[in-house]
Amino acid sequence: MAASQSDPHQPPKKESGQTSSDGDDPSLPANSPATSYPPMVGYPPPMGYPPAQSGYPPYGQPGYQGYNNGYNNNYPYAQAPPAAYYNHVIYQQQQENQVSGFVRAVVGGLFLLVILMCMSSIIVWLILRPVVPIFRINTFSVSNFSTVSSFSAKWDANVTVENPNTKLKVYFDQVEAYLYYEDDNLLATSFANPFFLETNNKTVMETTLVSNNSDRRQAGVGSWVVEKMVEERKSNKGKLSFNLRFALWTTFKSGTWWARHVNMRVYCESLEVGFVGNTGNGKYTNDDITSECLVFA
Image (cartoon, rainbow, N blue to C red; front, side, top):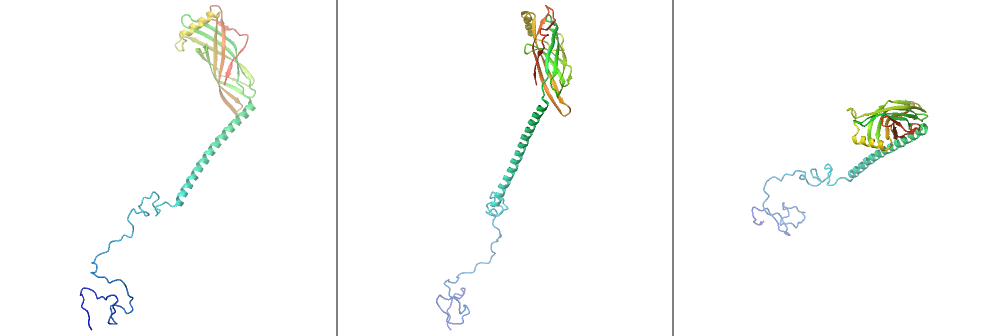
């Protein structure tokens, strides 16, 4: 049996298409299928360790934890789940609907409150028919009117106050009196006593005002005002006109179930006083005619 000599470092091989001369060659099975690949030629790979495999992709890869995709990183995809987005939108819409519903309820409640207040005021007005009191000048006089060295004078007024209401009592809690020359030249101020009026009743309110420039406790009257009064008295045949005004803090009451506080302003204008000769005493030229004052509430 002849055998060919081969390289001792190479494994035994057989050329393609060549059959074995020995039928029981142990290197290949008898029924082994033919292959077209040549056998491996060379040295076996060197011994070593394979590279370590972590089993996880590197940090920061898309689709994994640690990747900043702009959404919730707990979701293992680069895009947020559509259901979460729509749930967020629906939740925002529900919050907006709740806020808008609350605002509408508040506005509606305020509107209803205003309507109820207006209706109650109308009903009270129809039932009680409140009317402001009536003020009339009965008497008005001046005494000790002097412009020689320093200005001084004293005014006395009797004012009839009438309550025309049939269902309302009027309480005059505080009364202040002001005396003016012309429109804005204040001469004197004082307080009148508080009083009370029953329904369909009237009373006389007495007021005294004093001005004295020599009294440092009072506000003095300007010298130009005194000069104007002297000139008018001379040119108007010994007559001067004054304006008496009142500020009143009042309360309208009907039994114990209804009360309303009202601030009133009373204007008794152009009260002409005629002096007796060159004296400092004078009186209202229309004493025989009651002069009604203007009332603002």
